[in-house]
Image (cartoon, rainbow, N blue to C red; front, side, top):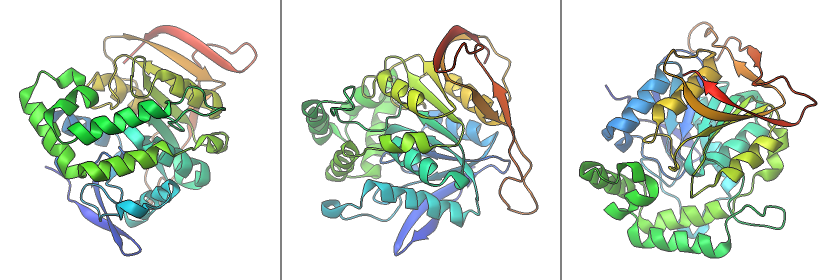
Length: 336
């Protein structure tokens, strides 16, 4: 059974959201500009991913303003990107969540970084999937995307958004599935129009949350695909080196989202990070990069009624004993 879509209010705007599951911790999963809380359930892969998250959390999903089932925004005068953190805060207030873990995918990374850095009291943990603090190249960010490449991406969106060829960019592992190609094209058309998605992506290219990274206090897990083309793994290294108490896990594959390519591996890491529970399964080879010491959240009991987490404790873990601090890498078998 699908969760009911409800609305939170931010001024005159309405923000569509859903809640699935009851047990702590509260977990917000957001894909930024690429979201439609109703349509997502039509894909079995996304539905399974979301239900798995809800099996060990109270899962909260929302469409930020301008996308999906939420109220539109004027494309010629989009609000500053930092204001999207207000969408998240409005939804958390509506569902009586005092503190939540954040799982940010696609272009939701800078918003989640901004929220975690400026609202540490409301952020219990941060998970960044194939994310970046900024997209475009700069003198102090040489790993960024050159302007001409960004313009080429925008041109591709202008030509192919809402059509089947977009599958090769968004989900190449599913390119051979005709049903999926048709669904993904329809999904994109319900998220936003081609002109709207171009406006959102152009605004995303202007985001820069790099100055916020040292302010993040929450334990942070960075999941990044080794061969991700749209956001190379060097962006993940940058995040891991600058966020205190962060751990980078390199996942196999190329896709930007976690839904379709080795989703079970990503889910296992998320569950272990949030609850301390490690599933018993066939070991899979991955590489870790640990920043100092990463502390994992325990599951906690919810207080009376719909209160927030009664308490969350962290358990220390290390991939290898550190020699003298700094960034260390360990390679080996990781139990799933």
